[in-house]
Length: 72
View 1 (cartoon, rainbow, N blue to C red):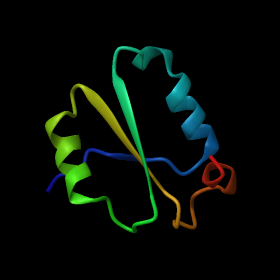
View 2: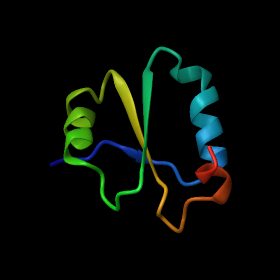
View 3: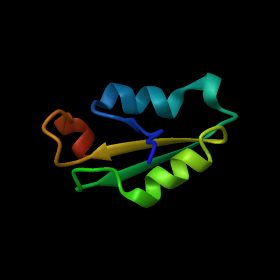
């Protein structure tokens, strides 16, 4: 199944996503998860609505994710 999600790994990426003025007309969804893989339901939603909604994921257990982001 195709995956159209964007993985957020830093507080800077998170802040940029939240404050992006050029994307104000696009809805954004952020999934905070402890799972290692993107859930199939989230993948399916990201494929179905990829032109209308930006799907993002923050995997808390990932070692690449900054500590500041885990505190959100």
